[in-house]
Image (cartoon, rainbow, N blue to C red; front, side, top):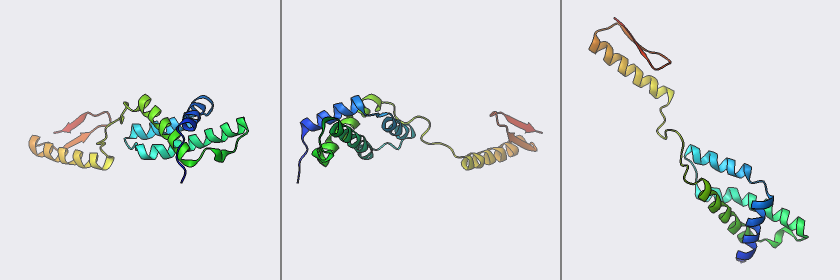
Length: 138
């Protein structure tokens, strides 16, 4: 079993930050973060692809074999990339209401409210308008 080489992982990390286009990886992780479904372990898997790209580019540029960077080394570089991402974007947190009300649930609530208002105000109809206002017919 091979172990991760910390020096090679650091070299791979710095090469990835300098020469590899990390925008698609950051965009994907940011989307997960904003939706509130970000997972650290899955982010490592995502950034393993970035580390693999970096290893291929590094090997091509310096006349090495791609396999010179073993899997644990690439995984360690991916963990460093994830740590870097989380330090930059980790405090954003989910955007929007995590307890989002679906349309079906909203209609159920509106129906219950309109029924209660009809009974309370003794009116014929209560309608919820698209702009958020309420129309009452007496």
